[in-house]
Every structure is written in C-alpha cells, then in structure tokens.
Length: 307
Image 1: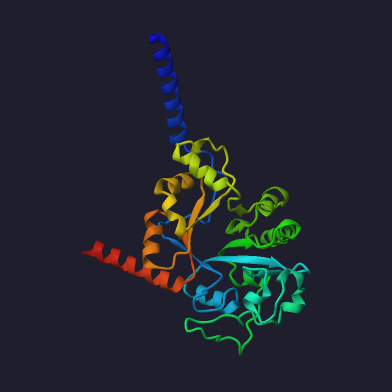
Image 2: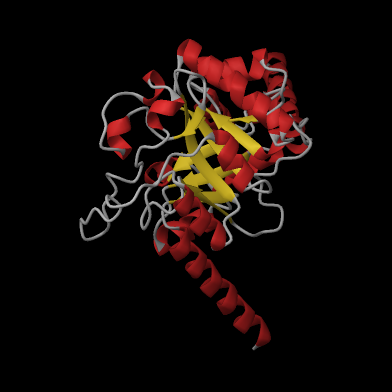
C-alpha cells in the first residue's frame, strides 16, 4: 500500500513539474511581430466603420474625420460585387445604406458606384441629414490608398466560394501594397481556413469556430502551454461578454503574441474595464469621446507625477 501511494505521489509530482515547465517556458510565437499588440502601454483605438455616431458608416467623410482625430486602426467589412470589385460595407444589403434594395454582391460596381451610401443615416435627432447630398461607397483600393500607414481589421462578409474569391482578391491587394502584417482578416470558418491555407500571403487572422474558447478553457486549467502553435494572432472580446474573461487569460494570449481587442467600448466605464484587463486595444463607434477620455487620464497621471 505504501509503495502504491508513493508511486501515485511520484506521478502527481511529475505532472506538477510538467505543468510548471509548460507554463514557465515561453512558447514559440506564431509570428515575430504583431502590429495589433500594445507595445508601449498606450491603448490602441480602432473605429468601427468610421465615426458612425456622427457620420454615415463606411464613407470617406467618416473615415477622414476619424483619421483627423489621430485614429490609426480601422475595423471594416468587405463585400465583393458581381464583377469582383471589393466594396467597404458591413452588410451585403443596399437598403442598409441607400434608397435602393437588393444585395451588393448581386450588383456590378457600375450599378452602385453613384448611389448615396449615406441615404439612410439619421443623426441623434432622427434627421436624415445626408439625403440631399451623395456620399458614395469606397472600394478597398480607395480605402487602403487613403490610409497607407494605418492598420486594418477586415471582415469578409460573404461566405463559401464568393467569400473565398474575395479573400484571394483582398490578399493580393495586401501583398501588392506590402500591408499583409498590418491587416487582420475575419470571416466565416471556410473563408478563414482558405486564407490560412490557400493564399500565398501571410496575414493575421482572427479565431474561427471554437479556437478562442478552446484556448480559454485550456488556460483555466493551465494547459494553454500545450498549444504548439496558436492558429490565430488576434482575438476580440465583446464588452457585453467581458465577465467571462480574466486578466490572466489576456496575459497568456500575450505570451503567444496574440493581440486582444475589446469591442463596443463607448463609455468611460467600458474604457476603464478594457484598461484594467490590459487589453491591447478597443473598437469603438465614438473615437472622439474615447480619445477625450484617454487624454484626460493622461493629464491626470501627469499631474500626479509632478506633485
């Protein structure tokens, strides 16, 4: 009986040693550099489709205004038209943006290029302030050309063969403009697998299916170190689901060179939560307010240090 207990003790001790080694030795990074990680302790701020609280989403004026406030990270969607032009749009639905109906993917670029993509935007007072003017859609080429030194989180809206074709076209544009490591690609499981395995361009990708939850569950039991190679380099956590995630999990993802952004941060309280968790960045609909809040925090910290 004593021998059996001793043997069990050795097994437990061996398991503990393995766990310590796995968690203490830094694992191999999947990439050498991740431009979406916060390296200088400055929270990265990304806009969702521009400044959609004050301007129509996905149009030039919205992105230009965000850039004017110092925004260098943009989260957008991409839809491919029937003649294979990539359009900046979060939904494959013309009625979301214009006075027309139908899918963007079923139209040619010539059929939609002169439509007013600000037609259905209403301000805080419920007024449709852009119906008397025409703000057209942006192609991916135009969008990337406007902000050549920025970083982009791009969601490929379409799935199946159309989504895969859109991925090929997008990756080729990123290769031509040398932007591959400045872009995270999101999308359906099929599209992301295609991006990872069938394109010749190395880009950063978001997790698909159960990749993120699988890693998070493994980390709860200190087993995340057994992941030989984390398949994603970027992860998003919705602010409404933040209670299920811990500072330790984000620290663990950082060890694997995975950037973590909190989505839906539009208030002071939500900003404080993202900072407390040590997230790399946030995605907001109101970057003007967020930048004001961050500036106040910086001024407050500076005053405390000088006193």
